[in-house]
Each structure stands twice: as C-alpha cells, then as structure tokens.
Length: 228
Image (cartoon, rainbow, N blue to C red; front, side, top):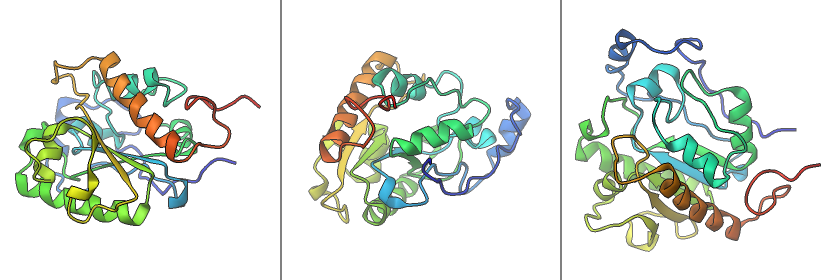
C-alpha cells in the first residue's frame, strides 16, 4: 500500500498547458500558488525539498517546478531520486506523487505567492518564509531539508556569505538541531552556471545525507526501490 498524501487541489487547467492569458491570471495570486506535496503522516517524510516560490506556470497547473525547461525534475532523475523522469508541465500525476511520497520526499516553498520571477519577491517575504520554514521543519521533522536557491537562502536567513552545500543549522534562529539543512543551486534555465549533471551531483550528495540518517526499507543503494 502506498504512502497517503495530504489532499491537493486538481490542476486548475485540467491537464491543459497554460496560455499567456492563463499565466497572467495567476500573477494575481497572493498565497498558496501551488499545493505542497507532503505525506499525511509526517513520520514518512525523509527529505523536504523547498523551492523559492511558485512560478506562474507552476501555479497554473498546481505542480512544483512545472515550467518547461526547468532542470529540477531531470536532475532529480539523473541523480536517482526518481525512477522515471517526471513531466509536470500539465500537472503532477497521482502516480508520480505516490512515488515521491513512497521514497519519503516532500516538496514545499519558502513563499506561497506566485510570480513570473523569483526576484520579484521582497526581502521581507523571504525572511518571513525562512521563519515559517524553520517552524515547519520543527513540526514535520524530516531528516533533511534542501532549499533550492542560494540567493533566496541568503536573504531568507540573513546569511549573505552563505554558499551551496550543507549548512550549519545551529547558526540559524529557530532551526531544529536534529534536522540537517542543505542548499542546492536554482534549477531554472535562467541559472547559466549549472547543468543537469552539476545539479544532479548536488542531489546525490543530499540523498546520501538522507540515506545516512535513515536508510529506507525496500530501497537499495539510495536509488530505485528494490524489486520484489
């Protein structure tokens, strides 16, 4: 039996790719541009991936990292965190959501408001998002949290000199001491410094940290589920 997820709204466009007019309509959303992907039982959560905020395409289809060209899903697949390459451009399928949750992977955002670009967020929004994330990490207790985007991390936690990789959570106000924190680069196509391969290497390191804390029953070598 699969891991039961928290309820998520149907994709607003019902499986249709958004038009420019559709995207413009979602620019007015102030909160909850995309639903979290989380297990109903927090005890099943091993890795919480945290995006910056929903893009307009992501909000239009209610699926994380959905915009075509975003390298999030290809890099996760190349790193072995997903068995198949997820195509979320028209929404996240029930099957893909179930596979993520079965692996102990959840997805949320620092800020709920949808924007065309992450740099449209204010510093105050990011700082408020950082405080909320620290609180949620203390409630959900995943083994590892991975924030996607070093610039947003620096602003959210007032760490202007931070670099990607594993972070010292003891320096962050309110961060739970038993939750490991990582920052990986932004996978948007706008980030010309990274490739699918370089992003995948970050995810391999993150997943190794997850495995070191709590190996998952039924999985081998930190990758795909073992065959029955």
